[in-house]
Amino acid sequence: MKIGIHDLDIATTHYVLNLDSMAKALDIDPNKYHIGLGQDEFSVPAPDEDVVTMGAEAVARLLERHDKSKIRMVLFATETGIDQSKAAGVFVHGLLGLPQSVRTVEFKQACYSGTAAIQTAVNHVARYTDDQVLVIASDIARYAADSGGEPTQGAGAVAMLITANPALVEIEPDSGVFTADVNDFWRPNDSSTPFVEGKLSLDAYLDATIGAWDDLVSRRGVKIDDIHRFLHHQPFTKMARKAHTKLAEHVGVELGPELIEESMAYNRRLGNSYTASLYFGLVAQLHGNDDLAGKRLGLFSYGSGSVSEFFTAVVQPGYHDHIYPAHVADSLDRRVEVSFDEYRELHAAYNGASENYETEEVTQAPFRFAGVTDRVRQYETR
Ligand code: CAA
Image (cartoon, rainbow, N blue to C red; front, side):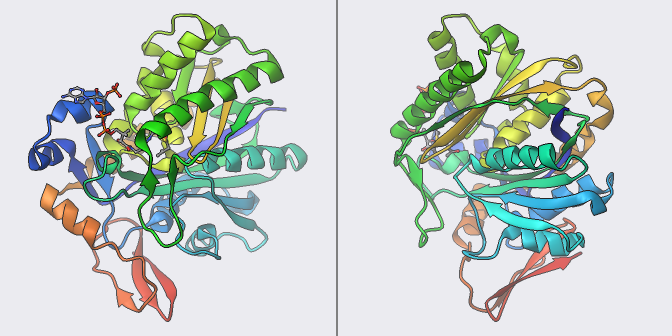
């Protein structure tokens, strides 16, 4: 029986910063961003947006097409958790009015945990074949001002429905996994921005690419030619190019840039969305090529720290009838552009405290974060 991603939808933030504005303000050659990092813009959250509001919007769009009574489990994957105890998915569950007979839990391992959630969902459906699992990957990549990571910020959410006989992609059994204890990127409990060893993070990512690939080959004997497109985690899209080059050197074959190009279209404009980034890559891949039916995708998921996975997915016949490029175009195009100074004001105004406060009403999205009352985060449906 085939199990995989039956349907998916996305959301991002109210604001966007064009990296030309950052280049001008910081007196940096814009080509460092456009060519050097492969990024053009990044999504910036309004004060009344967070991972719950983005995740809930993506789920609401997805569930317009499905019967929510079949959902048995909600897995929320994020690096940007909003509570140390309560799963962000429970807020989404409430906002969407999901059935109470649902297991809800949060997954964490930097940018990797969306993949762990998908594999958990696939395993659940293998045992309970009529069940559906909702996986939400939602993140806000927020680095310190003036740090190397600042131009690679971003935000977005992808909601995915995992079922038997999926309409989009079958997740194939046997993946390659790789864990290495490395301090390349981490965020202690008292910090709203990560600490990053930039050069180490690149090397750790590339080592993990090879480690996970080798494990995949040893588990299943996959050959590089069996894979028609490669989708690598995209903290910035140039990173996927580096991984592609490294993999080609490792296996000793030429892998043309066209094998990764289509997966980068959305992340160039969203910036890093951590757990959602690879899945925005998948959305872009499915939207960017109408000849993928029966083709195998190789997906590489990396989460600093580090845990990674190389797995394969086969695109299903008729997938064209189940994709919604207009939703992505709408989310990207409707964002309101901010100046560099406005972006820096929003960045500095971030409030992670749990004292009482109300947020200004800005977002036009269906759900908003209204502030905190008596230590409880308040969400509203608009
Ligand atoms: N024209 C064209 N290219 C230019 C240029 C110009 N004018 N100026 C610079 N460049 C190129 C550089 O040559 C370099 O390219 P290569 O890497 O191919 O050599 C590229 O632009 C970046 O330049 P620098 O290396 O000088 O950039 P930096 O040191 O300021 O920052 C970074 C790079 C360390 C990756 C930084 O963006 C960062 O810390 N990012 C956050 C960490 C990260 O994303 N790491 C990736 C792996 S970890 C991961 O994947 C998990 C995750 O999501 C965070």
